[in-house]
Image 1 (cartoon, helix red, strand yellow):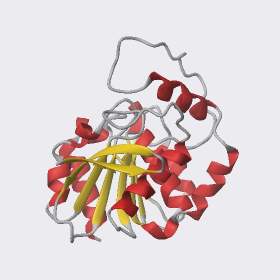
Image 2 (cartoon, helix red, strand yellow):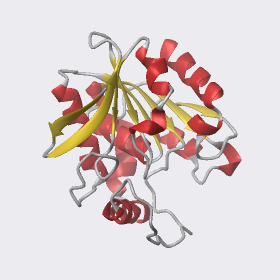
Image 3 (cartoon, rainbow, N blue to C red):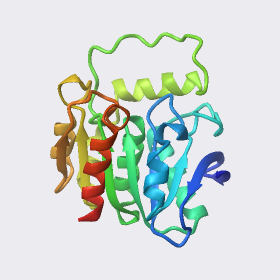
Image 4 (tube, rainbow, N blue to C red):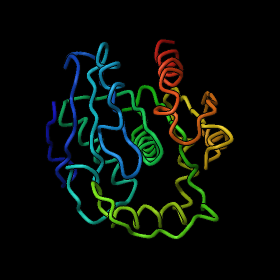
Length: 222
């Protein structure tokens, strides 16, 4: 069911599935996607969790406020948890959604019980990225693309140190040799993080769906 909540000064659209009395699990999509990116996984996790799948600000049918600091995007998710009276949640994030997830986990460590980061960039300056060129793509705010790109190229140095504040058991999934990111270096920065490599490139959960599901289920069950 698609719902809306006023959180952190914006309107956030999200999909909700599962028993509201069950533990909360949040699925966070990557840049330019929306909650539909997790179709199939939403139903899978809803068998045992109360699943919330938002359209991040600037995506889907959530608000396009024009400003997109990644830490503020994490506060949007904290607000969504507040709207559901959820003190804690398991959080799974892909790419940009994973960056939002680790900001939530390092700024609100007591609120994240388990963290899964799927092919997520370390917050260090990115090199050799092609210039961002607008085309006719829709479903997201191009201002979000430019704003987040600036943060990819020149992230706040405090973000890297902040990863050490994460206390949740963390699974870092790397897409392997075809991935644009060094998820192994991210795992090294998060205390006690477990690293699993699935040779799938950046879109692990769509390219290797069954293996992604198996690895995540194993992590959540132990």
